[in-house]
Image 1 (tube, rainbow, N blue to C red):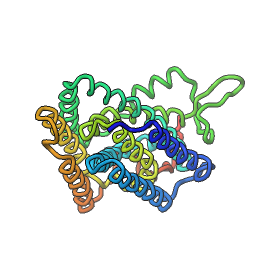
Image 2 (image 1 turned 45 degrees about the vertical axis):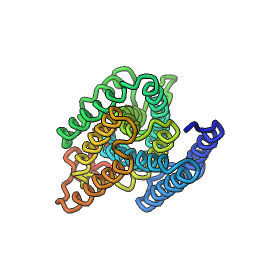
Image 3 (image 1 turned 60 degrees about the horizontal axis):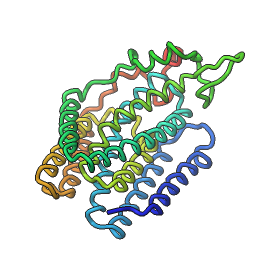
Image 4 (image 1 turned 180 degrees about the horizontal axis):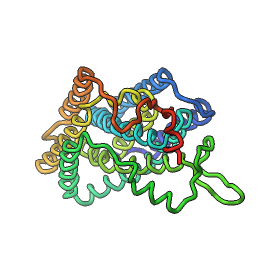
Amino acid sequence: MATSPWVWAAFVAFVLGLIALDLGVLHRKAKAVSIAQAAWSSAAYIALAMVFAAGVFHFRSAEDGWAFVTGFLIEKSLSIDNIFVFVLIFGHFAVPAELQHRVLLWGVLGALAMRAVLIFAGVGLIAEFHWLVYLFGGFLIVTGIKMLLAADAEPDLANNRIIGFLRRRLRVTETYEGERFFLRRNGVLFATPLFLALVVIEASDLVFAVDSIPAILAVSQDPFIVFTANVFAILGLRALYFVLAGVIHRFHYLKYALALILVLVGVKMLVNGYFGGKTIPTEYALIATAALVFGSIALSWFRKAEAPAALPTGWVVGSPAKGEEAEHGR
């Protein structure tokens, strides 16, 4: 179903309004985000997504409505995997709690831009070359299996090539300089550790986008449905981070569930691409995704909590343990 340019314009204006509200009113000053505030923000974004879903059901069709809800749940679930990495990145760079929101905000804006490009490119390519459905489906299955086999592995940030590349080519301050990513000293341009953290966040967003875009294209190839589901999932990612950052290590089985979701949607893409139509209905994918996500979270809560090995002893999100700041902030 073709979407009117006016609808596109209205949605983009709505998103820009939300971002302006966030930047200009809610988080004008650098400050730590409380769990209660983050929980309310996360709930508000989910509520907005559900209101939008109701509009899709009413003004478009039940098929598009289910596609949006399924796509949103898949993207929201996969975005939780980002949070595992964000916790490690902020711990490695010892980013103060009051500066984490700024890094995540710019990270989200970059993620939205990257995903918009990938979505329209993916939809256009599938429309032109149907055989790409099989390539994307196979890619999801292989990626899911790799995730399953490496579910307990953690990124090696100490030897990260991007960080090494930037440090070799940029002058980097030893300490944080408020919210600034760059500053000049005696006419010489310096980057701050906050900029390094932002670049690594953006790089991780790109990696996750390469996995998640084919996953939602397995649900729908309507660019409006795919884009809006992504936007609502990503906009609430920052708030969700501050809600889950302190307990994310307890979701031990969630990574296995996310890997199985990728395999599931990859199989769906292959089967529907080969047999045509809706051999595996979107509603079935929604039920399976919900069962895997919520089932893995519930199962994880019964597992004995273990502190994440990659975080220094005594580390609290945004507040490094004594003696860690000098090491990680360089």
